[in-house]
Length: 175
Image (cartoon, helix red, strand yellow):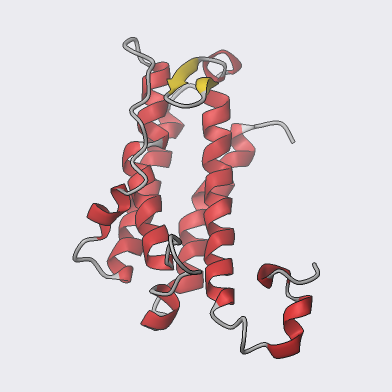
């Protein structure tokens, strides 16, 4: 499927609701467990999504569409730590919903045409990227973290499912 902003927006709009439906008011065992060393918990994933709302998607869109330097600031993969400090999961979910709504409202004010979607910015690792690629990546990034949330949660029961593990694709079994 080719990128189409009208097809992308419904996914971006739904992500906060999907994330909230998966983890809102779940016990700490669900939201504070991970997949092992150097992996994120659902709590950290939501904080990461918030950090992206603040520093990635719209700020980079504005860089691409602006008149100044087209170079992106490198993304801080630990930026979510400060975002989540002293907050509850409920507070993070609320913050994510608010930020996403504000960012999509701002995006909707931009007159995005094929010409503007083809404008480029400079990613610190990838080099030249188009606005179209950035916005498509925003959608896939959301879907990646929804998948990650499901996987992190499922792995908590990897032993509890016993022999059914072989049929559970999310646990590495047959799909």
